[in-house]
Image (tube, rainbow, N blue to C red; front, side, top):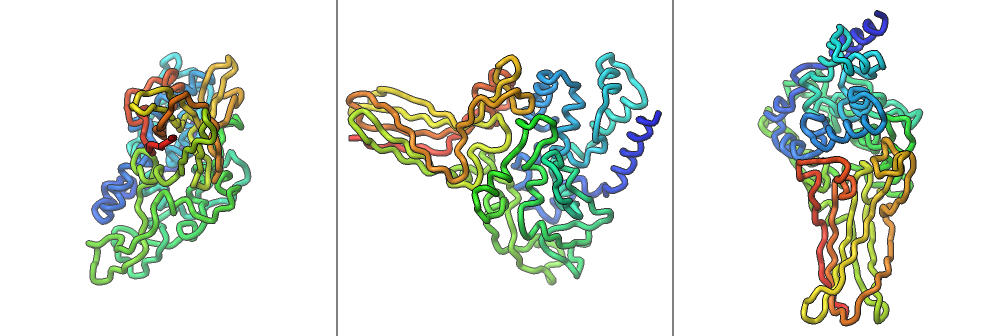
Length: 399
């Protein structure tokens, strides 16, 4: 009874801090159409399992590999994927009840919280713009909602004050973490919700160690442009300000981001050898974050008649094995087998043997959201998570 009461209290108090009209991004769209349209293309809008097959299948994969209940894994991942989820933890009683298809007050209440409509909108406006303050991190397990104190009224926070209350739909207030630093982004993109140290998302530390002073938003929300944040709201008092695109750019919705992330060169250094130079132009590893990602460089050699002589693939990725020594995701890994990711600003030279009569070579760089090897274990139908994204292609003369 005590456990049930705690869960009921969590649900009640979780809902108390949420203003319903802020939970629907479509409501924000009426004034902020440009920001809404960009956000809609991002993975932030697809952070709920109902909208993201890769996430849904990965949660089920991890639950199976770790011999845990689906809901237990889902709630752990929701620290970041759905930080306004009212349920913060699932115990063995619930897992056993679900396994035997038993319905109780407790299972119904948890199921209701897991299915509530507002969390299906993903990392939407009311997540980032309802963060009142960010706590100092005490451990790498302090991720997602554990870092946040939420606003308790109709205040929307961002990089600007609005003393004239132009918005009308809400009041506005400035917060420093929208202006300086990376604390908001790294509340989710640095750390782990699991106890496995291999499961850590290390993008923040990678950036810190690079010594770069750029902010995450400088690349992933593009450089600022001048504009009016809600051009149709009280235009007579509107102010032109520095605005950022709400793309939260990645390979799926911003090819230029990846095009600008690498510099490639290929030179003949001996009669039978070339040097492939790969320069990472970003302040974090490539790839970084989700452990299923992969970058593949394919080098294909041709003779004077454009006949293919040889093709070689080079992978940049982390390979994890489970206790059975089978490839897996980091969340259920027993060991890291290899790490060939490009470190921040790394300048890597790769020597490749070439066949006789080689005249030219084509270099292609492909980015996989889920690596081909892991696609054999996690069956995904949605091609946006499985197809190769071409981020570079060029032909080099080797005469």
